[in-house]
Image (cartoon, rainbow, N blue to C red; front, side, top):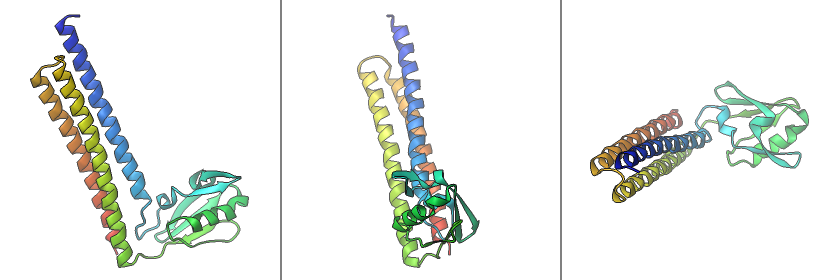
Length: 197
């Protein structure tokens, strides 16, 4: 294999790795988005109870697959089970969840009044948001580290020039900075929602 062909193969491999790094970073951001959706703010949002699992005919089942969830008012969640016989199981799962919610049902739907957060709870939730954001930043930086290590190995093996490696490392850093910025934006927005009275 000629040096030119080897270099072209290495370039193609580097581009694939950069795209893969972006996909992995995007997944970290999606995971953060989902985590933050489960943290209470002062308002009712269906994503608040996304992670609740209901014991539905002996199998743990995500709540949103067995019921319609809406927020008709700022402080009220309405859960409409597709199967009315599951209403007790849904209510029980909501009571057992760590969200501190008090559901009530009328045999047709379950209503959850979202109480306003105390100042202390707001600070606790804001702290939790910062913790989740830091975990996402670490995940993104770990992906960057993996890619830089891979690039350094290509350079060491003599497949790609030092200048080319440095250019690609700069690109990896640019991608990383972009995702860390998105994590920060998401975090600030969620914190503002939590601290809003």
